[in-house]
Length: 449
Ligand code: HEM
Image (cartoon, rainbow, N blue to C red; front, side):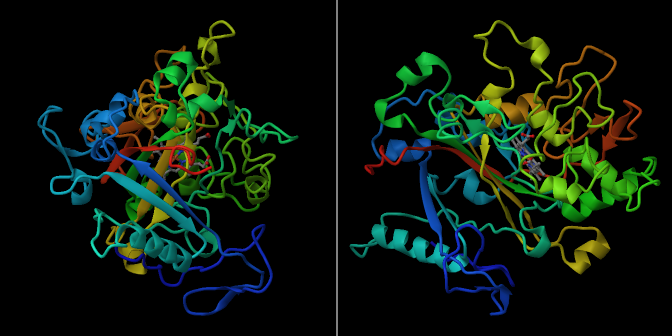
């Protein structure tokens, strides 16, 4: 395994609640960036692909067909780009490592830490376990390094929007010992992320797999200069808020309508009526909103966060009290991280991506066909979602991650807040370059406590 390289310059330490006395935050140039005491933190997770379990001789059925077949087998249905008109012929346009033509992916170690030094040290430690007798029993298919973006972009993905705000809370974990879910946070059954829903799913799986979760990994490069150019070109007819002291530009408004939040992370429905940065940073308020089920005047139906979590939009389809919530069963825990350098001046000037950057998307769910794969296929790629009473309005594609084989995509409600007009999305700005489905067992299953 190759050591991970830090991006230059990058923060080597974090501060805040994990702090202990004595260490200063520095960047790779050795400059002190934060005058707060710090603690070095690192964590490791291991997860297995089906081929990895096979290689270990684990024959148990984990009851997830997508996991069994692997993500490459799902690429055609996910509308990933590639060559071949049928599933059988299809070869996705993925990085070689994920195509698994020469080397199978058996598993993944996810190492997260507060600096590249701690992460590299942990990587060495793991490597040593597998090379203890002088021969290596592990082959490195790919070593991928992600990092939080530097400076004021910390916590923002590469298009510039604050990420990681809305996550579900788990019953029995996030609502015990006086803990409360945050306002607006869905409190979901633990089974949605761990066992599967209902008795059958829990009892059908082998004992060791309980308390484990399926992990979807996707490498998602983002065409940032091209995305910014589209916002500038397409925002022409959007009225800005001229009567505000610091009005957002038309491009800012269009971008917020495509994502469903301002770059600050504030939900589009409130800002810019108040200080959106303060709102974005207040966990008591930044997720406390609903959409108006039959209107996209404030937030388009196809906006990324509305497609991915329509909140109460689907309440009209709810059945009797024991009926599974049509949104809750599809919620996922997201644990992704950006990768690649910041956009360079040359890329800004030419409005063309030269250096690959994007998101290593990671999500946990009890079964992939209700989690990641469902969200991508049935909601992001589905122009008719969410279903509306007014048949004349077609919500369109999720403009951030929606994929169509022919690339002809459009969304409604983004042009101007008073209309349902369709806005052609000139291209996909996110295109998958690979991924795999894994199973992440509990610590107990791995032989821990
Ligand atoms: C939320 C960006 C890929 C599912 C968000 C948010 C941003 C964002 C800015 C708002 C922050 C938040 O509410 O936490 C992106 C980008 C992606 C990407 C740039 C690709 C490069 C995906 C994928 C999925 C997904 C592949 C699943 C198929 C979600 C979900 C939420 C979310 C479930 C939370 C919605 C809510 O609860 O309100 N994403 N995302 N995202 N995204 Fe993505």
